[in-house]
Image (cartoon, rainbow, N blue to C red; front, side, top):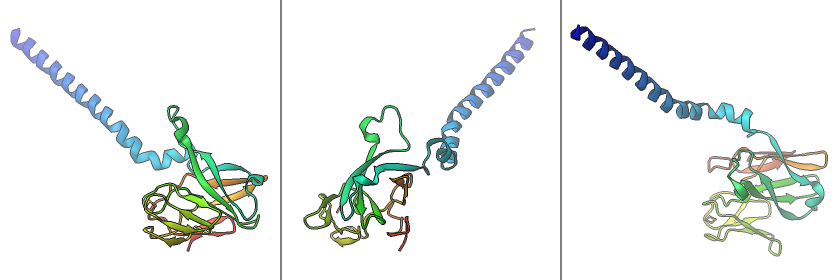
Length: 181
Ligand code: FES
């Protein structure tokens, strides 16, 4: 009788152990699976590939470069002001635009636009870029990163989901698309 009890207790403990191991396995697997599927799910869920408005064209006078901001397409409720991302918009001739990431192509410091000299300058290590975003001098090995853009209903839209990376080719503006040089 006590041997039977011992066997049933052991069987029960084995089943409990299998159940707990399975639960822990699932608990650990969920974030890994979510991470692996994120390239697929985030586009649909968070609009990574959606076009975001920088505002009406009247905000960007021809021949000038202006600061603009857009809301990060992937935000959390607690992000606060950090969900606001800045970029530089250059209206070349009222038909052609360039939208530059604000981050220096060297180590990512925010570059500033100096209309007096028509240069972008980086305060961190002295990187300098011409008004078309190409590299002028300093440590950066390439020009500023550019966003794809389009004009719709009098508004300037950018595809903001693709974050600039060093692997991204230098972009040139051709008919509304930033393309590889
Ligand atoms: S981060 Fe701009 S020059 Fe280094």
